[in-house]
Structure formats: structure tokens, C-alpha cells
Image (cartoon, rainbow, N blue to C red; front, side, top):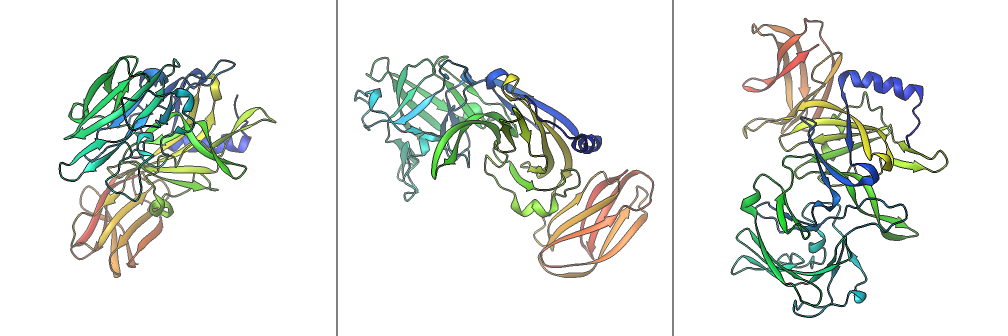
Length: 423
């Protein structure tokens, strides 16, 4: 199942690919896997949906617990998926009747700090983490809730997170009748290179998630409005990794769109990319991609990328195809005495027109812009005025030999500089 490209879209993206790179990320036949993708090196770590059940955040202040919502699609047979419920009792010793469990709990779609186990918290109580409450005297989060989890093999476990004490989660679980009770501990210090620690009931093991990934291609539940009510549907999409910020650009030419107007709309929401960059056309019986949409993705070190989705294979291979372009480093001025707040140049390498963007704390007249070659000679010069806000300046590339130059902007001793490549 493929979308239909017009000649124009094929031609335009052919030109785009000269400056960018096509990437395929697959979650497998019937969406059987999850793929953790890293932009800088195209590394993709694929895990089977069934490889883990619960995820514990490993950050210093994190107290989030998620469950694995991913499940492959099914043609006739029941989908083997996990389901989490809040138990009708807070006493772990009570027997739980699975027939009384009605409303499933779901992970949030806004943050990795918004897990299903945390979704029952009292928003008016800053000490409440959902599964437990912080004891302000001991600084230990003490478990208060009992949960019931239906596993993929239709068996059940009741779960209580007993505590989070000095970076160590203690979890107790058993069958719903209390048999086969087990207690395990998960020490965050054992997973310093992984943002999440994955626990599997079937393997009785805890392993670290892949490290330093930017995007997660997977199936997850999303709240969709149907008939005025929000219903949870299992969708296939893309979630951003911890620390990633993304801005979505709509109704644009994905080849020429500049990142500058979108710097102020960067979001840390997990589902900025989500699943709606594609839809299935029943009439054509094919997937259709929004080709007038681009995503600007900023990594924690302020490295910026542009991503444009161009194809989706559907359940046959679960492959998402996109074009990525490395936009380079967004430079942030760290000197507190500087008038500059931030600075960026796009594109880099410079081939034709280029844009310089910077924010100033206060107005500055007669700012100088220089391009300096490797011999220290000024080969191009402009004088501009800067306002106390975001400034966006467009220039035509100077006619100079290809090579690496130093771009220097500012006035007096308050200067910003960065290497640029003229091509």
C-alpha cells in the first residue's frame, strides 16, 4: 500500500535529496516492533513489542512508570496487547476480580514524565505521583495504589510500587489471588546511559533502553475525538525522545521553508510528529502523505534538523520514509554580559541566498557583519541595525571561492562568530 506521487512532487523531492538524505525506518510486518532512531548517524535499534512490559524513568528526579502500549495489528486473531487498570482496592493483600476492571489507563502523549501509573495522581497535590505520594520528611515516595495488568498471554498480575527511595524503585507483584508474590528493585544508577529501564514479566529481567535516541517509531494509544467524545485508538506514529524539541511547519514548500520563523514554536510534546502526517485513503486504498509539512527537530545540544515524510508502506513492512537535512548548530551566546541571546545561520553550507537570525537584549545600530577567510581577510561586509527582539536578515551569497569562512557579527567587543561553508 503506497501513496501516489505526482510528477511535481517526485521532481521537487529529487532536488531536495541533493542537499538532504532519504531515510527508511521500519517497525516490521504488522507493526511488530519498535524502532529507536538517532538522527546524527541513522542508527536504528529495533525491539520486539513483546520485549518489555513496564518502563521506569532513570533521571535523577524522575518518578514516572509507563507500560508498553505497542501491539502488532491482527487479521482475525485477538491483538496481544497489555492493558492496565487501577485496582478497586489499595490493599495489596486483597484478591482482585478481573471482571470488575473496566476503564483502562493509558500513557500520556505530552511527556515522558506522564506515564499510565502516574495518570491517577491528584493534580492539586504536588506531592502526589499517582502510584505514590512523597513523604516530605524522608524524601521517599511511598506507594499508595494497586494496579492490575493484563499480560499478552491473557494472564494477570497485580502490582504495587512500594517506594522510590534514593533512586531505587521497589515493586511488588503477584497473581490476582495473591499467589506467586515477587518483589524486585530497580536502581537508576544501573541505567545511567539509558533514559528508561525496561522490565519484562516473561523474562523476569530489567534492561536499559537504547541510549541517545531522538525519535521512536512505534504503536501507541492516542485520544481521538469521535462524536464529541475522546476515544483511545491504537495508532502507528513517531514520538520524540527525552530532551528533543520539535516545531511543525504546515502548508509550506518543504524544500525552501526556513527554520527561523519556527524557532519560537519548538515544543517538547512527545507527539508533535505523531501519526497525522499520513492517512489511509479508502477510495484509492493507499496511504497519503502530507507533502506540504516539515518538522524542525532540535536536539539537547541545539543541533537542528529538518525532516519531511514522503512515504509510508503500511502494515506490509511498517516502513516510514523521510528526508532529513542537517541544518547545523544553533549557537547560543553564553556570556551573560553579551547583548546577544542566540544566533543562527541557515543554510550551512551556503549555496545561494542565506539567512542570519539573532535575538538582542537591546537595540544596536550599525552592527557589522563580516565574512573572513582563512588568511584573516574580510571578503564580504554588511552594516545592519538590530532591534531588541528576534532579527531575521536575508542575504545573497557573495561571489567568493568555495571554502570555509568565519562569519562575524556584532559591534565593538560584543561579537558572535561561527564557521560557515560557502559552496
